[in-house]
Length: 151
Image (cartoon, rainbow, N blue to C red):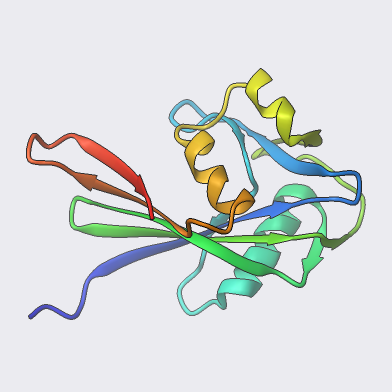
């Protein structure tokens, strides 16, 4: 039985305010553009929480705390497992500023439909908003086509 695999760890965080708005990032890039939540890669040996705090600071200029894990997203491609740890919080301070990653701004959840979203964000967001599902997983079926499941 194989107990080792190559894993790339990432994070994503939904920040919400007292007005019922969520903070979104309008991501720039040809392969991965549209609205999403801020986040990024976890460096080797870095704490999951500290990496999320760092990524949010880099992408939004906000300092966050009191993070609550709300799920994971994962897929395996070319022998590498990719795992995104999903957090949410309403605890933040600082002046919101966009970065080279894209523009950041507050919107109501209902407004998401008016924007182009990053691929599958319309499915992943359910893990942040509902307590019934906690994992978004992609698997290749027998025809080598991707299928995704919310578990």
